[in-house]
Image 1 (cartoon, rainbow, N blue to C red):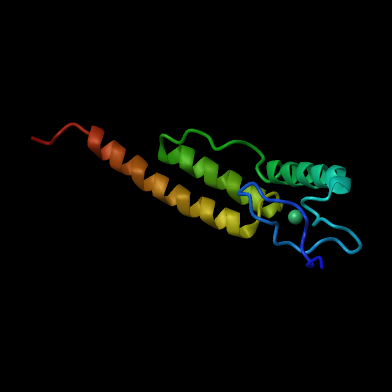
Image 2 (cartoon, protein in one colour):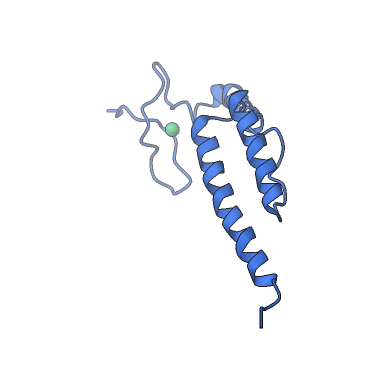
Length: 113
Ligand SMILES: [Zn+2]
């Protein structure tokens, strides 16, 4: 009696726990007939992730750099190139970076005495 599970073996050597596609022996991940579809889905996912950022994160050595970066994040968020939650975490990271820039500037100041 065959159980209602994918017939493939996972990389760890155990039986794949996924349900097979209807009428088939394998789940979507393991069905040899679905290889082209899987590749297309993977390529599409990669392309949409790459489209989320209009440019790589720049080096931010000054408060002005951080300000410019935040302006870009706002533009990207407004143009819906990045999700609101992504914009929020980038803004939070930029705030930390601003603190680090200020701390570094303080470190490099000559002493008052
Ligand atoms: Zn499977």
